[in-house]
Image (tube, rainbow, N blue to C red):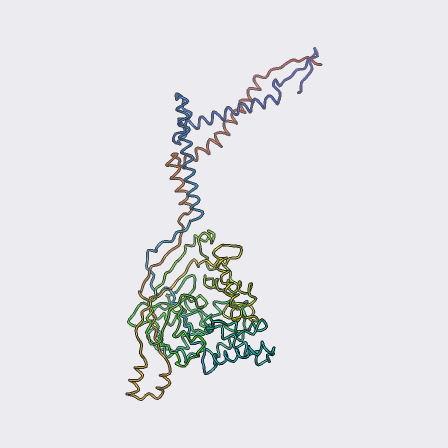
Length: 570
């Protein structure tokens, strides 16, 4: 405490209370001012119910009742707002039916994959005879410990590779053990050698009512069924990453380049709308006309191997989007001998709003094309993702992959020796995917997707009878060769010229969320935007002005009413 000494030896103190006392008094006074400010806000606020809590003339009971009702309204309002917040965070996406129908010309015709059930040409490779031969050798191999020479090793690899596409109930009885459990890229060369070729599978083809060479329409593709034939699929260089995938054999022998179509924007018909079937690839859908879009007469040789897939006949047909790597699956359409299989196609298209990009993929349950990287595929689809994931898990658990799976090295291709391990890998993938564990595929659908389906109608088809009639009239020179096959016919077309489409969009945007919250606040409290401004005003401008005014009054009071206190000097 500072002061001066007068002539009588007394200390003159100019600050009556001292700094500490002044601060205490100031805090006490400011608390009273803030309390008065709160009462002022409560008395004048536009919020319903709150003015009754502080209004003069009301009893304490009335004030308590109004306070309870006001707090109850606040709690109910906050509870419902939390529900809106939870819904916004967990289910912000809604799928609705689009207003307009989508014509079939705006979507690609599906990729059609045909897999013959006759897997092995007996004239090239007699699987049954080889099976008997290796069964006998297996007995001597175990009995005498025979050693395979180089020729026998190649023959064994060929037999084991081909056996993967043949139905053998108990392959373990023919296995030569761990030493010969793996094969390499030669398996695909062997499958190409023994599988039915174009002339063995196709008799004739028409596309949009015009006869075409089946070899020009269909390309060979490697699937779990062996060598199959696919049409309207993108080129391998457009689907696969050639820099990371093995180069010892092909998965898809297609080199047709994309023309006038993109995955993001679809077809561009500005320049040539008159003849889209020849000017665009993949081929777009065509409205239903008098004739099917695709007509194919298939054939299967009478003489078949007695053991290799002998219990099945005809063809399996798979339909998928052109961006998917053609593969077999459990869902297929059967084309049987001596029948016409008429397939009426339909599609379901689901587009997503670009505004959904700001949401996490797990919330919107889909991936945009550039969001998910695949090691072996350039184009993300759920099907491509699942194939890659299965390949990775199979190699992780078995040390090899199946011949149709994408992989970086073809040194270790599984044989049927590893069937149990491969099946375990499949179950592991399904378990991990369903349990959402540490390693999951996360193969969500594409945000913009087209899924195809078909209704199939079957009728009798007796081409042999027609051949006999023509032979009786015209004497067909190659009648015996024609009669050595079983024939079937497949017709493919769109069921309707237009289909419904779906759209994935925001259920709750930020504006919708604020609107819902504002509605609840208005319902329970009479709250509005001006009410928010009112709160901000009292907490900032009004509070600052009040405190500033108090400090100025304190300063003026000190200048005009300052007193001196005389204390005896010790």
